[in-house]
Length: 156
Image 1 (spheres, rainbow, N blue to C red):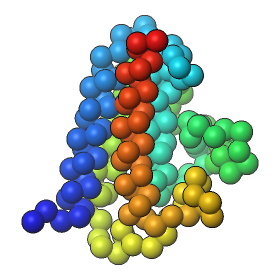
Image 2: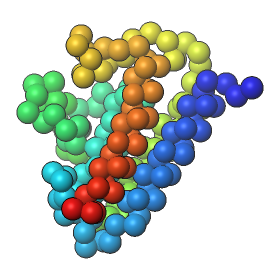
Image 3: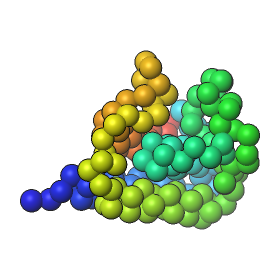
């Protein structure tokens, strides 16, 4: 039987591949164009930022695409420059998503049972934390949601 870690890594790999396929289908000239509130470039950077924060637990204060930029907790996480800007070349943005995605999949595949236990930072939870496994599962659905947003944006 597949381990929990293998299951999570496989599901993240699959969902990130589906998200990437949708992003690859966006013409270069439309990649930075806002549709339904955000551009495909923003969605890619948003998922990369949330992968770093939720799966990798990276608290480096270089987050600029979390989606709650008016909140104090986000402002505190923006003291360093973003690794990639929304107006960067499509290839640069997709490479960033690919790199962070690969790191997240590798982390999940190699995580110990202890790594999947306990609480983790989760700003959308009422107390700012949620069980680690629940947070990882929530973010997997979050990737699928943003894939859908990019698809809907292209129909707008």
